[in-house]
Amino acid sequence: MIFVPSLNHGGVDVRSIRARDARPLRTLLKDNRSWLEKWEATIPGYPELPPVGDIIRSLLRLARQNQAAPFIIEHDGEVVGQITVSGLSFGSLSSGSIGYWISEDRAGRGITPTAVALVIDWCFTGLGIHRIEICIRPENVSSLRIVRKLGMRYEGLRRRYIHIGGDWRDHFCFAVTIDEAPGGLLARLTRGTANESLADIPEVDLVAARTPIL
Ligand SMILES: CC(C)(COP(=O)(O)OP(=O)(O)OC[C@H]1O[C@@H](n2cnc3c(N)ncnc32)[C@H](O)[C@@H]1OP(=O)(O)O)[C@@H](O)C(=O)NCCC(=O)NCCS
Image (cartoon, rainbow, N blue to C red; front, side, top):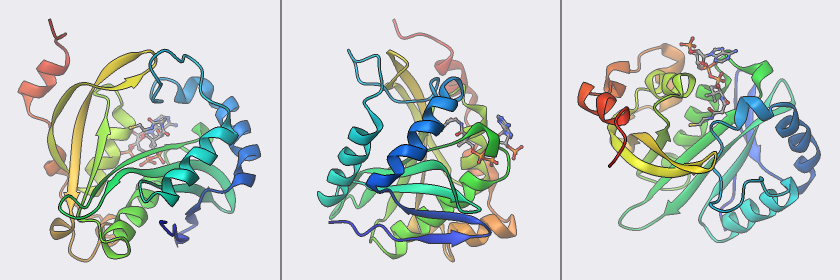
């Protein structure tokens, strides 16, 4: 069972998701449909998102099985989005993958980078994880800014990697290991000392991502 902590910095709180988040999440997901649907993972053969209560139950089950750490993002005390560490594995890999979203009316205030930094620092220091990755669609300019601000290192292009909006989509993968973040990601984010160029994507991958696989 993963114990998901409450963490905060500068008006941004991340805490464990719970059953009573269904109501505010349902409203946010409905009001932000067009903002989110381009980036939301889908299940092949199922065009609709599952009901919010089912999503929360599934996330809590994965946390009980040591496979995920599901967080709610709050800003100034209001639920504004989600951040989830999924695909957690321990032992020789000790790795996980992060996904996130925030409501459109809170975008552009640096809330998500702060939330991601808080969660990655906890993964390294509290959970014993050694490496975290974030995979982003080439078209998602806003999300690509997050990994730059955090100084995450570009790892490569994953072709047709995640099912989104009814098809398999290419993703750029970025990662950080505990050794690359002495002092933590939040400290270097707030100081503005992250090495953004680590997230540079080589031209060959930018071109490949624009070229369909035969
Ligand atoms: C990607 C996302 C999480 C960024 O969160 P955020 O809290 O706005 O992050 P930031 O404040 O650091 O903004 C990141 C970039 O978004 C862009 N941005 C700012 N305001 C914006 C707005 N109102 N609308 C769209 N993009 C905006 C800017 O390029 C900004 O970079 P900058 O700070 O260098 O100018 C958010 O845009 C989002 O939830 N998008 C929809 C879901 C999604 O893409 N999830 C991630 C899938 S990998």
